[in-house]
Length: 160
Image (cartoon, rainbow, N blue to C red; front, side):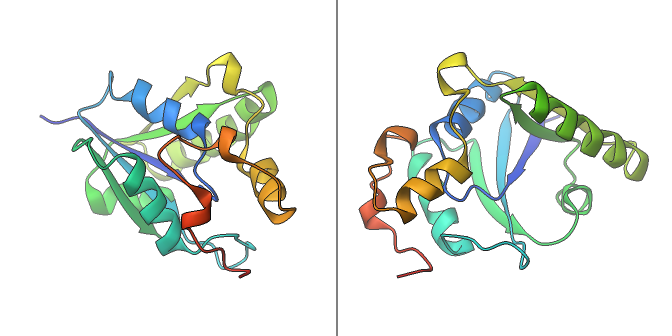
């Protein structure tokens, strides 16, 4: 039986921290679905389609990584895809507390789905999408915080 994990997130934008989690998780799972969450309440920098393209470009040569999007609850998406694992990356103790609470609620709603946490490597612990978005919005160079295969100039923001 193939082990598949869903790696949900807004990925606005996809960072080197996200990339590192996916590559390390491929040692544990046969397939990873990177699921871009569509949240109408969030002010995103990039559209869902642009974020999906960005991520697909990063993993274009990795057939065991799929890219998709969803709305609603992550556990409902996992059930729809018949996936039993939710993958999450942790950078800090604050991340752990936040993710633990979500994982516990998910466990009550969907006892058949397990949350799996992978710690970000120390050199990526300071990287988060919020800071990277702020750098981009301010016209700074965020290239060192996104995967090497992403040239941010190639992707139009929703603010352009």
